Image (cartoon, rainbow, N blue to C red):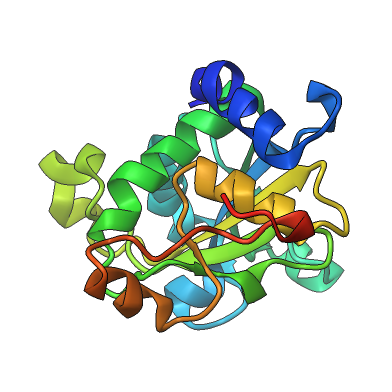
Length: 207
């Protein structure tokens, strides 16, 4: 997906956003993936061994070794407790993992309709949760082992989008992540044969 951004999407963004330099374009700077202890065991802390399988599952999804998240409390750190597992990706690794999420994980989520504009934070980044990871084809041969992995927290850290949410939306849409202004927009798009209209960006320009 990084090659797609560099060779195709960046050119489209130059035209849509009317910027003077490629350095001004919005881009994916970092992808943070995590499985939280509270989503696995219902509490904020667990023993490390309880998340060993989840760390392996996260490594399969991301292609990178996962790290155990340490609690802020010194008391729990001394007891060997952890709050989850996480991995931080950048450059090609971030794009590769995002491609797997977009094309393999999200389509398998029965309740997923799209990301909402309100999920963008003030810096233009976006966070969402994938309820089930077990439908990933990588787990097919070991489905029973990974069936209870739990949900996956996904955080996309973007650059070139500060105070410009329109740029975030255009970039995410270009990376094949559906961003909706309203939840019912899904039904409207389906009823129109998948159209749904253009995406509003800065200056009122439609994409």
